Length: 250
Image (cartoon, rainbow, N blue to C red; front, side, top):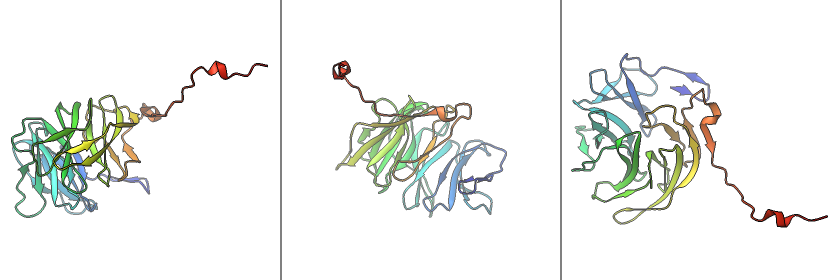
């Protein structure tokens, strides 16, 4: 964990096994992550301020990857399958904590799920792997009607706090903002608007970026060998036609 104000970094976990996919709870008090210390990747939680050891949220024979919380912090959204990506599930953070499949009967490879701010919609990725895929949105609880957000490709969808836009990254490393508005049964979607390009530093594109609530500031992992060249703003161009005719002859 890095304190951006002081520039101080602190190691958050110390287990020798692999730990990944950290997700903050909405109150910023806890971090949920996946660890393979017992074989498959299971779900753990730890207080953001340190203190007691991690507590186990959910263990099973299949690997899991947390992706987001409902805005009230009561429900965790995660994917579960042979490699942590298979189907989307929810896990209550209190009570019996029994997981439930988000889209029952779905045969797609689902992951990177994100609740809308009002908790009535879920944006997620359908793909054969998380190196390529498309972003979809569907009502929650599910009604079986999904709407494609990314026309060609997309992954790691994130909502703005007003629920009116979804930002995602394409396979060509272009960050796009898509305006959305809820209908009675499915989401109405406008054409995506490009924001900027960013070259991937590795092949794992799950939760590769974070942004502020308005979708205006982004936090990205930049390869030090690329530096600022990793990110390119999409600056509008003005094209002047027949410019020669505007010259004044002396």
